[in-house]
Length: 68
Image (tube, rainbow, N blue to C red; front, side, top):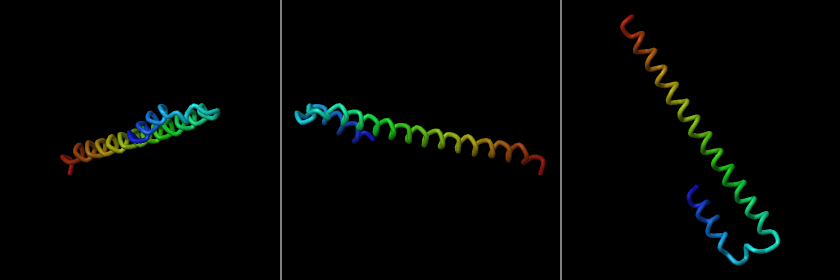
C-alpha cells in the first residue's frame, strides 16, 4: 500500500504525466488507491468483529464455567 502511494506521488513529478490523458491517469490511480483503502478498511472491520466474537464467546464460557 505504501509503495503504491509512493509510486503515485513520484509519477506526479514526471514530465510525461502532463499529456492530454494525464487527468484520466490520475483519476485511475486515485480510484485504485481508494479501492485498496476500502478493501483494507473492510479487512480491519472484519478482524475487529472476529476479535469481538471471540471475546464474547470467551466471556460466555467463563460465565458458564462455575455452573459446571
